[in-house]
Image (tube, rainbow, N blue to C red; front, side, top):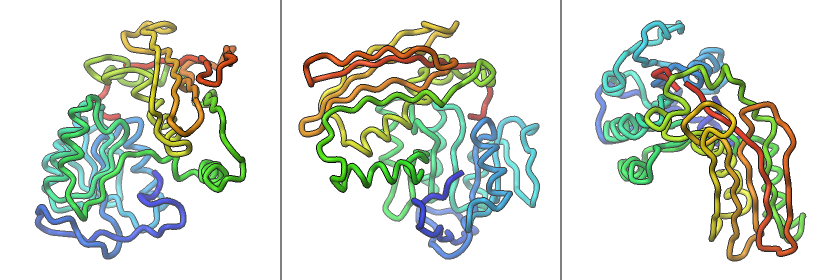
Length: 294
């Protein structure tokens, strides 16, 4: 897991509190973190913290509905109910790494109890749930989504080149990711994935949020977007595994984007029309099956 702050910013410590309240913990020394959900994302985060890879952070508690996932040591408290962890007084902040639909409920509960919250993307599945979660945030609380790609020095350099004007006017963007390969084993690691009821969508809701976030962070928000989705095009799933998006901004360049592939990268078709209004690219990606952790 990356630090809560961009590279170069020291992680301060949130003071421990024995009684949770609506007042966020003050910043003093090591952050006492609780991780809710010990699946594909939560467990690696826990291991990296226990290995001392995140300065000034201590893994104080973990939570999962399956006690068999508690493969942690070092005096870490364990819970099977997120509400109990949130009210335990053992943590200053929580990282939510559960299936998508539970992000809203757990996030609101943690924020209302005065904790700082970092939630895996997407913060919620539906727009209305995102707005409910955001509305629960209070001044003084740290509340963020896990868009860790922004902390990568590679993207920091690209952004500085763009915003510093060294590349001149950007007239067209063609964004293709081919190295985020996802095997069938990945999509088979949890029955909640690749389903409307469990995940709320497919590649557009799972891998793509990172790339969509980077696009707007680097080049600005689009004014118009047009997208096409195919459902179960390359895999036996009910949600989208093929997406093509084109966008335009009022002042910036037109852009096209394709999701990261969930099968081995194959031929990518690309077409740039004579008009400077849009461009077209396509690649494919897919989803997977169930567990109660992300």
